[in-house]
Amino acid sequence: MFDEKTQVCEGKIVKTLFKDTRDNKEYKSVKIGNQTWMAKNLNYAGNDNVGKCYNDDADNCARYGRMYIQSEIACPSDWHLPSNDEWKTLLNFLSTTSAGKKLKATSPDWDGDDNYGFTALPGGYCGSGCPDIKKASNLNKSSFWWTATSGTSLSTSRSISSSTDNVSEYQSDPKSRFYVRCIHN
Image 1: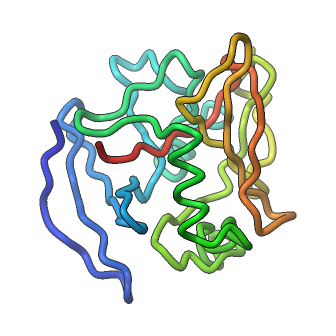
Image 2 (image 1 turned 90 degrees about the horizontal axis):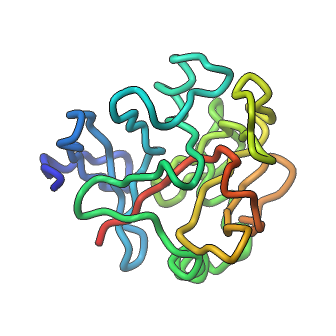
């Protein structure tokens, strides 16, 4: 269960603070259209055995959240990993054109407009089974997020990069390490 606390006004964007009762970390959430998204990547470590920090550096977890293989993902109670269709609903609300720019953080953190308070940061990724987190790449250039949509051997992920203003869809190895944005039930 999440413990909703208070609303914070950041310009024209209203974010709600809530606490993940599993580890007492606080997160902001933001309503975009009819959906409520976490306004920061998940940073839940369990008993220090789920998720990894980019380049095994705790400062990167504090800034970007933890990178998970798909089987490690556990959103807070009352939240869930969004399906690819829920990502499509978000993109349709944003009119799809330049959706990535609308979701990216503003300068100096990234090159976006952050029109809706999603505040995506370029935390990189660790693909192709990611046997060594120190081989993660693309810090300050892109970010990948898991969806709950899986096939027989690949899972759907979403990405935003510095080289485009769109949100891309990929079929990825479920043992890759990507970030997680949970959506409220």
